[in-house]
Structure formats: structure tokens, C-alpha cells
Figure 1 (cartoon, helix red, strand yellow):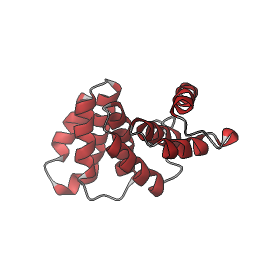
Figure 2 (cartoon, one colour):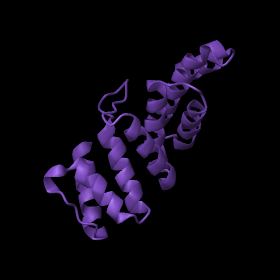
Figure 3 (cartoon, one colour):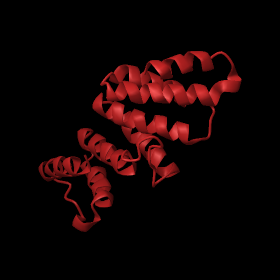
Figure 4 (cartoon, helix red, strand yellow):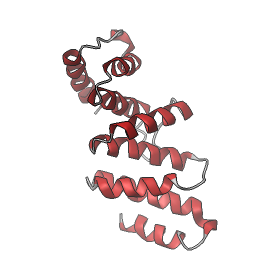
Length: 155
């Protein structure tokens, strides 16, 4: 975390270092997320999204923000960011830890749909995550049970 923060401070001195600045903020965001400092992680990721970059760095920051904001209960943000990320790269993998991927993003979006009361879209995401058992019921009790099951399986 300290190394990422030091790099972000150094890189912030010149726009020529925007890629490095965004990369270091993304690293800081993920480090804070793993340390369960979700508000700080969210702030780091949001700073990255303000850069005008077209790269994997932006997708990695979006993915981090999807995970963190889902934990923080910001479901509208989760749905919008997850949709944008999955539309950009349906086979997304976090570049520094490939076990974090499109399945985690889709699961976070399904959870956000569920927590927002949008059980139909939740079921549709589960149909994609678990095509062998589709169509998934839009019954909240059944959805909740399946969300618990698939969350444990994806861990």
C-alpha cells in the first residue's frame, strides 16, 4: 500500500505520468480493498475513473469499484459499472490477480440487482453464471439461496 501511495504522489506531478498515476492509484485501491478499507479504496478507484485513459487500468479500477461499492451497499453504482465493464470486456480478468474476473463482476451485479429488488435481472445474471440450471426463478427466497450457493462456489 505504501509503495502504491508513494508512486501516486510522485506520478501526480506531471500529466506525462497519467498512466503511472492511474496504475498506482488502482494498486492503492485494491490494496485498501484487501485491507477492508472500503471508503479509501472507493476514493482511489474513483480518482482513476477521472483519467482519460483507454486501457486495462480503467477496467481494473472499475472492477475494484464494483466489488467495493457492492460491499458498501451502493447498488445503483454497482449495476452501472458492472454493466459498462462487462459490455467493454465480457471475458474480463483482473490483470494482477486473474482469479478475480467477469464471474465476480457478474455475481456482484446479480447481488446488487437482488438487493435493489430487481429479481428478474438478478435471475438473468444467474442464468449466465450458471447456464446448467437456467432459467433461474425470480422468487426472492430461491434467488437468495442460490446466491449464497454460487457465492461460496466462486470463492
